[in-house]
Length: 155
Image (cartoon, rainbow, N blue to C red; front, side):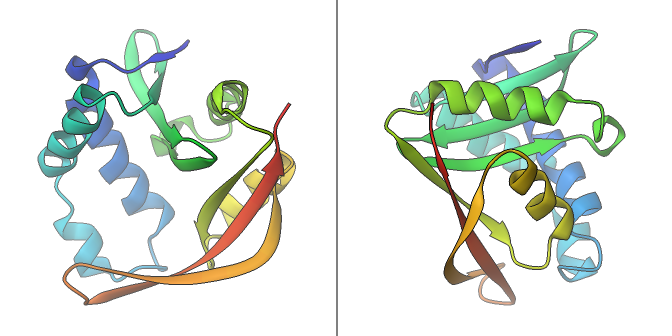
């Protein structure tokens, strides 16, 4: 089931965010950074976004939040699932719902350039790398992320 997130989902979204980063980015981002990620800190951030009306969808399995997606005009900002739910179709369902709800005729997203799994997922969903790249720093400048932009036409 895919539905709009409510404030009460923030803790579960924070947990999904941290666990998915730790699994997806193992070997791609420094292990000490991944180990320090805080589900409660992420939950507070997601609570603010939901409370402020930023669009967030959640994917549920047996009544539990197992994934989420955040988006805004012209951009998919985040799409994550608990690792044990990868490859079961929930990511595609969540993605498809976001694509339905995105306004306009095209959208972009940014993917960690070394995240081959995510890049392959987005390519299967009709996204194409458009040649743009960016460098983002996190963790007070201690971690550098090289990202590739993907673009897609919207229905």
